[in-house]
Amino acid sequence: MLVEIDGVRILTDPMLSKRASPFEFSGPARLHPVPLAPDQWRNIDAVVTSHDHFKAIRERLGAPDMALIKVGAYGDTWMDIHMNPESAVQDNQDLGADVMLPVHWATFNLACHDWAEPVERTLAAAKDNDLHLVTPRVGEKFEFGIPFESKLWFLPQGN
View 1 (cartoon, rainbow, N blue to C red):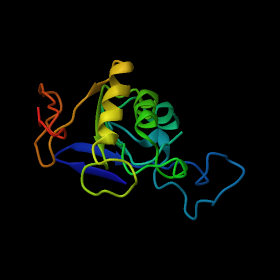
View 2: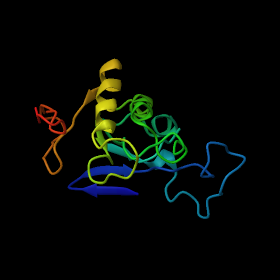
View 3: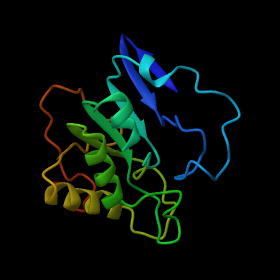
């Protein structure tokens, strides 16, 4: 879906391949053609991926300024549907986004990991990869392009 708000264009979960699969020769086939040819997608400000969509986004659309990437609700047997935090950081690197905002971890406890584990692992992976990560509190305003100081609000001491 392409969402435009006040001139800002956000592409969510771009699935542009012919099949919902990491392979072109297997997996469920698309029932409808892509609504807009990839070479016609212009001026995308941000790309939101809730699942891994295997470097093709950057190759087709260019690197976004910021990526909102899902880092939570994962497990060893879920890797085909929900990536772990380290995979999310790799997804951001594949996209080439300047800033990563981790999502899909703070609202529900859907998996067997601790509530704050996804963001803690994301922070560690981001530090190891020199990635600019922002972690606003739930409901806190973050405006891209304006300096933002991430706090460790999810830890017991709430830094």
